[in-house]
Length: 115
Image 1 (spheres, one colour):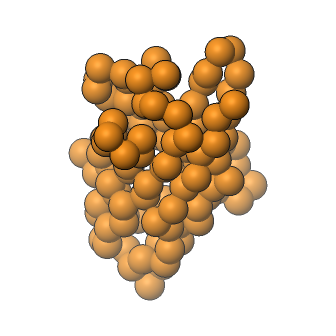
Image 2 (spheres, helix red, strand yellow):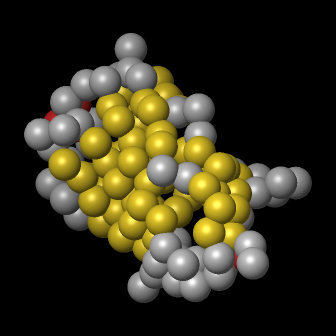
């Protein structure tokens, strides 16, 4: 079993920044990769960023240069630093982990970008 708990969402103005956190109930080395997704109203959930067990990262084109995924192995926490936020970044953001062939999700944290 894996529990994922996201935090750090909120309301921010366009151009602003937020840092999301995902607290994981197991050692981060238990996973080949950890991911952030988001889902906007009326849209499908989409992959934003991936970080592997060795720290390699990959990003969706629409967040490259603005978002950064990172991990703190000592705290069992994955982060998503979001800069230069746009209204179209408004969504519920989810942390994801694949463990022993089962997909685990957090409850999500709402990010709203609006003036």
